[in-house]
Length: 121
Image (cartoon, rainbow, N blue to C red; front, top):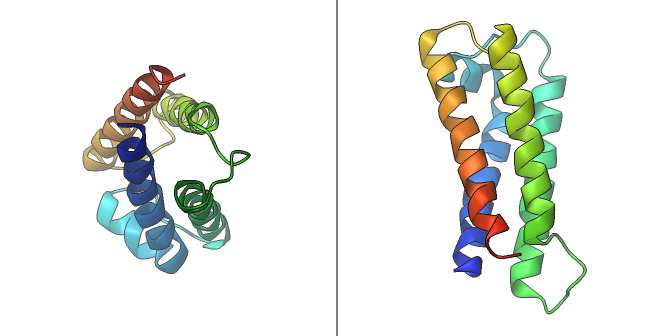
């Protein structure tokens, strides 16, 4: 089950990272998020997500124990969910209802994923 969680993290973080790195403005428009004036920060976020994905892939394929663990992923997921919640509550997250709904679903998903990962610690 832990291996399946790692693959879920790889898929979700990797695909979002690639989308943000390649087409941040288009992704924002499609998802109903605020427009991107300067693509630097979304692309940097995409690169960070790709880096986390690469670390997860290494952890899953190499017998190295000093990589990202479920505990590290819990911290990453909960800090992301906390930031999303604060931006949603302050009304600075998305410009459309579709965008707000997507971010609430993402927040719930990150929190749920963290709770499942907590059960493996």
